[in-house]
Length: 312
Ligand SMILES: NC(=O)C1=CN([C@@H]2O[C@H](COP(=O)(O)OP(=O)(O)OC[C@H]3O[C@@H](n4cnc5c(N)ncnc54)[C@H](O)[C@@H]3O)[C@@H](O)[C@H]2O)C=CC1
Ligand SMILES: O=C(O)C1=NCCCC1
Image 1 (cartoon, helix red, strand yellow):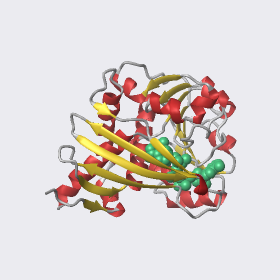
Image 2 (cartoon, helix red, strand yellow):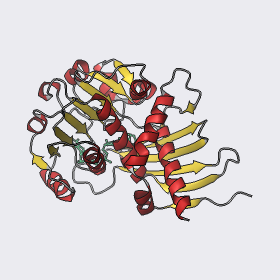
Image 3 (cartoon, helix red, strand yellow):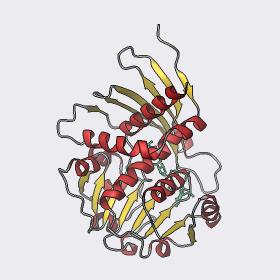
Image 4 (cartoon, rainbow, N blue to C red):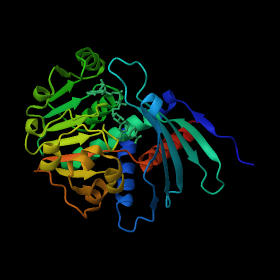
């Protein structure tokens, strides 16, 4: 009979999952996903169950990485919250299976995994697509993703200046006080992104907050919020003037309001750039539209479980 699953708590996941281990594994997984005959990676587009009463969704995100034999699913609830709400906007649990036997080996917190793997993939996009001498990073939004993005971007790159904007100034100020390094707080998006080389959008917005006319030509935008077909973070001008990269084409055309409603064309998946089958147009204005993928959670869960076993 199979052993009962181990339970790995949020604080344990936090201590076990490190960007230096995660980033190379995500790069390999994204590359495999984007191979033309991607029989190595099985990942259907996320199934979402609307929770109309609560302005939210339950997302089911299964994935099987055949060669690594990782079978995993994340269950994630995400919500559109009113300004000032104290309820969480994302809650997630990750289940790691034994693919042969079919039992669950581990149940682990999915919030840290979601925060870190999303930020790590944005860092991969920036490594490939940001201008060669990037000095100014602007983060729009000041929640969980803002912090994980701040952490991985400052750990991986050397920006001279980091700026933050949030719809409530106090939230941006609290964020700036919580970070290790110096972060300047800006009251308007237009000023915050003026001259920025890299812009990360990590808001709960459903209408555009970032407009193309404010973005420096050649800048790189990692657009992480607006993960529903009728939600936006970026305006049509930006979507049409930029070269658009995605994590999954199939996911992007099903779920991204910024892509669907602007009519923008997807230029490449990040995995195609990593595989060398599509170019990284670093000198152009680029948008990486992130929606999140089950394989990213699967790779992270495997890492967490490996590290957990080493300690027990
Ligand atoms: N692409 C991906 O893989 C993932 C995307 N997400 C999305 O990323 C976004 C941020 O997630 P978290 O940081 O966890 O959320 P959070 O709730 O911790 O932070 C959200 C931030 O956005 C701001 N915000 C909310 N509504 C806004 C509006 N209408 N206009 C401007 N700012 C607004 C909030 O004030 C806060 O600063 C969400 O949209 C979430 O659904 C989350 C996880 C993974
Ligand atoms: O990939 C994820 O995890 C999520 N993506 C979009 C919305 C929240 C969770």
